[in-house]
Length: 150
Picture 1 (cartoon, rainbow, N blue to C red):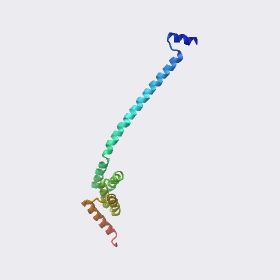
Picture 2: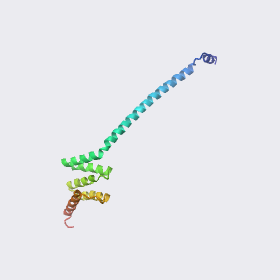
Picture 3: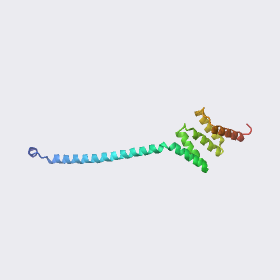
Picture 4: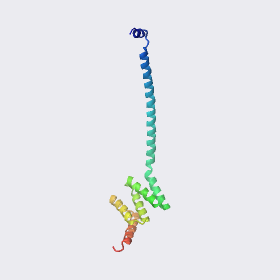
C-alpha cells in the first residue's frame, strides 16, 4: 500500500496500471485492425453490388439477343430457354412471348406455341401485330392439321 502511495506521489504508474494500459492498447490496436478489415469488406461488397447492378441492367436484352442468335444457329432448346427466362423475370416483355411461340413452332409443338400466345393475349388483350396474327394463323393451321377430323 505504501508502495502504491509512493508511486502515486511521484506521478508514476503501478505495475498493475502499466499492465492494464498495455492490455488496453493491444485491445484498441486489435479493434482498429478489425474495423479496418470490416470497412474494406464493406467497400468490396458495395463495389460488387454496383457491378452486379450494371450487369443486370442489360440482362433482358442480352438474353433476348442470345435467344435470337440460338434460333439462327438452330439451337432451339437454348433459344426457348432464353425466352422462358425473359418471360419469367420480365413478364411484360411481349416480344419474348412471340419468340418463344415461334421456337415452339420450329420444334413442331403447336400446342405449346398456342399456350404461349394465349398467355400473351390474356396478359395483353389489346396487343396486335402483323407478326402475331401471322403466327396465330400458322399455329391454328398446324393444330388443325394435327387433328384433321375436327
